[in-house]
Image 1 (cartoon, rainbow, N blue to C red):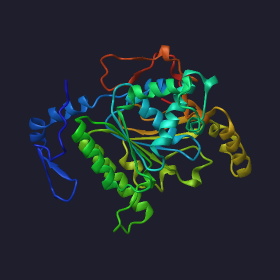
Image 2 (spheres, one colour):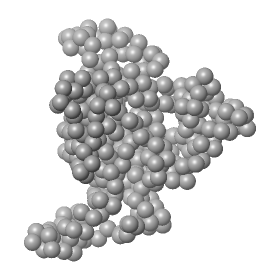
Image 3 (cartoon, rainbow, N blue to C red):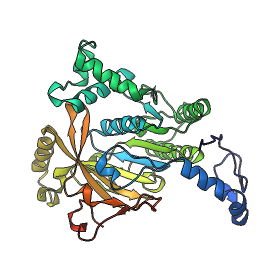
Image 4 (cartoon, rainbow, N blue to C red):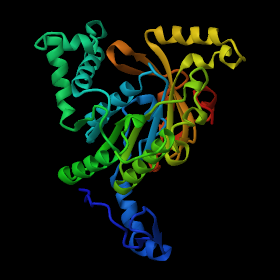
Amino acid sequence: MTEQIIVPAAGNAGHDVNAASSIKEYNMAEYYKKQFASDVENFRNSGRLKSGYANLDAITNLYPGLYVLGAISSLGKTTFVHQTAEQIAEAGTHVLFFSLEQSALELASKSIARSVAKENADDGLSSLQIRRSDLSSPVISSAINRCMAYSARITVIECTFRATIDDIASAVHKYIKQNKVKPVVIIDYLQVIQPAPESHMTTKDLVDYHVRRLKELQTDYQITMIVISSLNRQNYMAAIDFESFKESGGIEYTADVIWGLQLKCIHDELFSKQNKINEKRQKIMEAKKSNPRKIELVCLKNRFGISSYSCFFDYYPKFDLFKPDFTGLNLSDVSFDSDDTDGFMKIPKGLEPELPWPL
């Protein structure tokens, strides 16, 4: 069935309390009669996407909602989300990628480097090497062809530190209107969205405002939106938690799903001890130098299923590549209930202790 894309407007059963606000008032009897079925149909039509990472996809789907991913520097936030975007596009869904820092050239060369490494790690090249190489070489030209097979479904908006929240909203509206599809929207990253010229907000208030505006945009179009966020520097030597996002506006309350990337070594006994700052810094430096880097994706909040979970990845920075690490997870023992439209995982009895996340 072809989905009809409608420009957001007040629902049939509700009306704006204030034309300048996002508050709507609904008589619930009227809502059930006139709009509930339509809203459910729109949610179904939005689909339940898969990230393309087999270990994460065994746990959850991607739904229309606001996803926020945070991590300290050098853990591959952009790479993880950019690879997710490509895997989603390869599966047939459009992606609108707002790159507020990196150019289309940088992203394209990272895609090619990733594709080369996936095909044969022995031929692996960094994105910088790709940009300095002969593009007609068989290894690179084959990778370009593989990327081009799905790249028509990826649109990169190169913002170079200049985009405001109104620019982002306008681009999303224009894309949906012109293409008659709802893309997955990715924003890299939250703290680089620029204030309006007349804005006098503090940095924290501005980020809070941008998070609210992004959630409004996501809700208006019922799209899947993934936003990258930086973390508090005070939390760089501790396991990621809600405190890590404390200076990043109202993420804890506004986002539907909150993810964090952290080094796997953060679970070492050393990090549970008081002080020992130098030892902790050394451990983190060693973990960052590892190849691959051992990374854990932690879910702190999830409105669409299992409330908290984690899964592991091997991150190859040179190739801009994440590979699932199935430690503790036997996918052949994990099945989905075909009648379960919400994508909750059925866990066979006895497997619970082997899973890498608490139940």
